[in-house]
Length: 378
Image 1 (cartoon, rainbow, N blue to C red):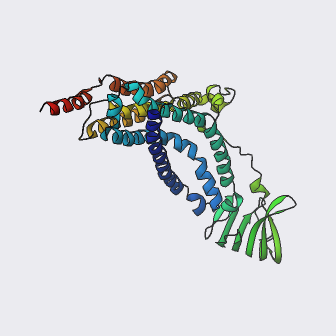
Image 2: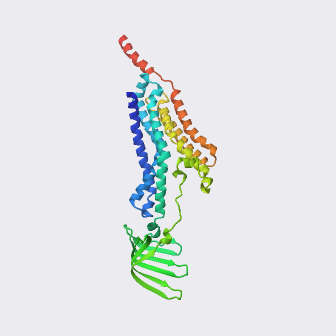
Image 3: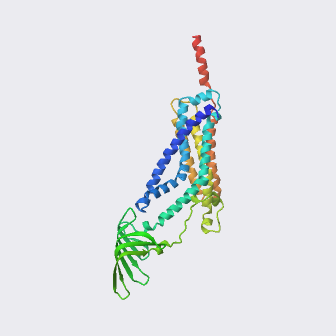
């Protein structure tokens, strides 16, 4: 790679990295605000919250990358063109393709990285995310007791705790249990904790009482120092993890198991997700072409390129929105999947055509050569 190519590549790579980090930070902030429910309501640790937030990153980065490429390319190219560095490249005999090739190589590299994330990183991360969310949803300590609330984790079972400590201890417990024979039992305890005894999950209560009415209407009242309340009925669940289309590998999207009712019913949704995984990296190249056309696709202007930038920004926004719309429409009509490739390729062709239809003018170079001769004649 020649010196000028490396220089142009460095001028583009830096802003692209910074824009990606900045937009990813904003997206993670919004995602973390939405995930605060894990800490507030589900009483999960900060480590679980951080893990779930980070597992969303592959999908967030893939959505953000085309925007980051577009914004960074506009910033870098506008500076290079305003300071006449690109004009000097043209005046030195460089072709348009030679000038834009570092930017296009950078866009192709980013597109390849996005494709790898779509095909391998995102499914692996989202599968782990789904398992983590399943564990949070089935976390007995968070579903059984909520501080200051009467909860009904199972039919005929009501649980209340005045306070829930940070270490998982419950204070001032109240449990009301209705049995199948019509009798009911009330448990009260000063403190309690989820524990395991003989391989079984129990709510270990300390310093409490039990009150039970027998079938004859006799009240049985007992006190205890420690009592293990069985929770096996709540932990023995046959619920399985269900992977959504975004969690599946590419071969599972294109070749679903039609023997399963859900996959047979959602075959078109799986197919649309599979084509989206392959086509969305193309938006990185398309947006780079649009950014290049906004700066290089016209003549040099000392007043800036606000009008062309605004026009290409609108084209990029419409292109991406239309891509989302088409992806949703593909869940109803399989033949529309072709448009998932046509849209980014069409935007790419539009941007490149705007670049190469503009003829390179050498009037600046001619004028600079003529000025010394004119001064000597004077």
